[in-house]
Image (tube, rainbow over all chains, first blue to last red; front, side):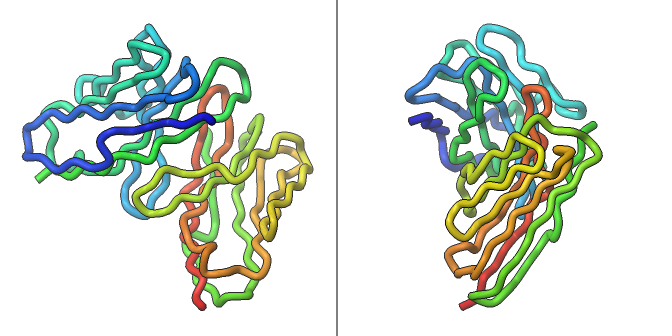
Length: 116
Length: 109
């Protein structure tokens, strides 16, 4: 149980393109979803926290107009990288959890984004 | 800002050797989690420690949470090539996870 599916697994696109990444909880309702960014051989850096039906909370230094997050249902959150540039190339990972203190986060398999 | 210092950053050892990875912080965490991540995949939870002083064992892996819940260690006994990967500690603070920098472990046969 507690499977999180992320799509696409990898994407290559031209500079200036907007890219949408989906994160779905397949067998549970995710009241909260998290979006992380990871550079090669580095750790996960939290970008934003999204709660179903409300606006996402972004970490310091993360541009909310650049990284649009929508969490419209209890099983789906999307991250849109708008007007992507080569410096946005990274590994993006989502996680999802249910309500309640101490509930574990379940991670997706990540999306490799390469901007040419 | 809660910081979790993880060491060493990189470890290359021979099969059969033992190793320990450390995570330290000046902050108190409600729980601490250890993950293992393969290239191109998301992190996979190995264990969660909650109580200060808690010790958990998972086959050849032993996890310990410090008494003050500010630090933790992962000890691997008789490492095998299949243990190769990125190991991450993460402290739970509020509803967020604060990740350490990670330890890249390479076990040579």
